[in-house]
Amino acid sequence: MNAEQRKERFEQLAADAALFGLDADEARELTELRALPELAEIAESLADLDLLAGEIAAEAFVADASEQELPESLRLALADVARGEREGDDRGHGERGRGALRPISGGRVDGDADTERGGAARALPWLLAAAAIVVAVVGWSRQSPDVPVANPTPTGPTADPPLASADAASPALASVDAATPSSERERLLALAGTTRTEWSKTKDEAARSASGDVVWHSGLQRGFMRFKGLAHNDPTQTQYQLWIFDAERDERYPVDGGVFDVGPDGEVIVPISAKLDVRKAKLFAVTVEKPGGVVVSKRERIVLTAAPTS
Amino acid sequence: MTTQDALLTRAGHGDAAARQACVERFGPLVWALARRHTPSRADAEDAAQEIFVDLLRSADRFDPARSTENGFVAMIARRRLIDLARRRAVRAVEPSDAEPSSSAQLDERVDASKAARMLAALPERERSVLSMITFEGLSQQEIADRTGMPLGTVKTFARRALLLARELMSDAPRARDVATEVES
Image 1: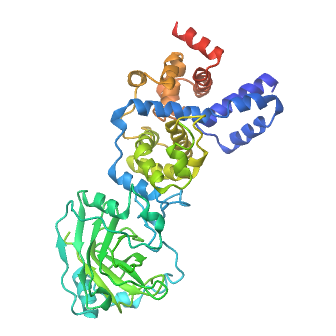
Image 2: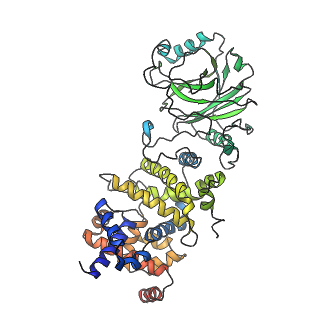
Image 3: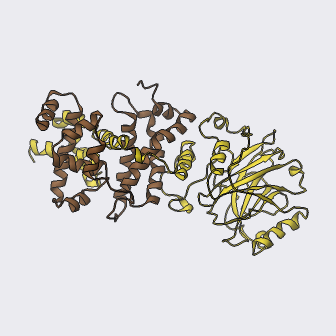
C-alpha cells in the first residue's frame, strides 16, 4: 500500500468509525494508521468526525418539532439516571429485563447486595404466610391482630403538599430542585394506572403516630412510600424494610421492596426499590429489621400495611 | 456560550440540578435518535437510558469551542447506538417503529443552521447517503439494500460525504469554493 492508498484507507476507516463503527480488526488498523507520522496531520484534522456526525444528526432534530416529546415513563427513568442511580450499570438491566425501569434510590433505600441476603435463608417464615393474598393479609394480621383493613384511596392527581425530605444521609438530594422524590411522586400520581393507598398502622410502637400512603405504578415498576410520624430509627440498630406481595407470584415469597430509614422529624418520601418485577401488587407491608435488611422476615415487627384495591 | 455557562459542563461537574435539567433539555433529542437507530420502542428506551449514563459520565469533556451542546449529545448518543447496533447480531429491517424520514422530508426540515446549509450544499448522492446514516440511523447494508448500491460504494459515498461536510462546516476557502461550485 503506497502513501496515497494509506491516506485513503485512513480516511475511510475514520469516516466508518464516525458513521458506522468499526469491528476489532478495523479499529486496530485505524490505530496503526493513526500512529504513522505521514498521517499525523490528517489524523488531527479528522479527529472530530464523530462530533460532526453528531452535529448533523442533531440538526434534523432541532428542525423537527414533532419529535420533541419525551415519553413520561422514559423521563422518569432518565431522572433516575441523572440522580446517579445507574452509574456503573450501563449494560443490561439485570433481573428486571429489557425495557424495565430501574427504581430510583433517593439515597435512602438500600441498594442491592447485602451479605445477609443469600438465597438459602428464604424458607420457613414465609411458608407460614398464606398461599393467596387474602391469606397473606390474615397471616400478617396474626402477627399483629389489630391491623386494620387498609383504606385505599382513588387514583389520581393529588394536592399533597411537598414534604421536607428526612433524608439526612443524602444531602445532595435536597438540592435537586428539578426532580425530588416529592416531585417525582407527584408526577407519578398524575399518570393513569397509578394507585395510592393509605397506610394502616399496627400496634407496633413505631407506628403509633404514623400515617401516609404508598403510591405504585405497575407498568413503570415504580412507586413511593410517604410517611408522617413514623418513628425515627437508628440505622445501626434497626432499619425499616418494605415487602410487596405480588398476586402473580408465590405468596410465600414477597418481593423485597428495599430498606430505608426515617429521620427524627418522622416525615419522609421513600422511593420503592423492588428487587424483582411486581406484576400485581396486592399488599405492601413495612417491617422493622436488623441493619441491612433480611432476605426473609420473621415478621416480629410489622409496622404498616397497605392493600391496593386494584 | 462559555464553558462555565454550559449545562453539560455543570452537569459534568456534578451539579445535581444541572443533571436533572439535562433530562428535560436533551432527553427528547436522545429519544429521537434512539428511536431511529433501534428496532423497537423497548430497545429505544433501553438505549436512551444507556446513552444518558454515557452522557453524564462524559459531560465534563464538552467544549463549546468544538461543538454545540446538541451536537455533543448526539455524538455520545450515536456512539452508543452504533455500539448497540453492532452488538445486535441481526437487526430488524425496519430501524424503528417510528416513521422513517425520507430525503424529501429532510429537505424540508433542514433549512437554517450551518449544518443545514452544509447539507444542502452536498452533492445529491452524498447528501442522500449521509442523511440516511445520520437522520435515519441506517446501517451500510441497509443503505445498500435501499439504494441498490454495492456496499463498497455506500462506504465510499459516506466517506466522501462526511469529509466534504467537514470542509463545508469549516471556513476554509476550499470548502467555500466547493459549496459555491455545488450550488451553482
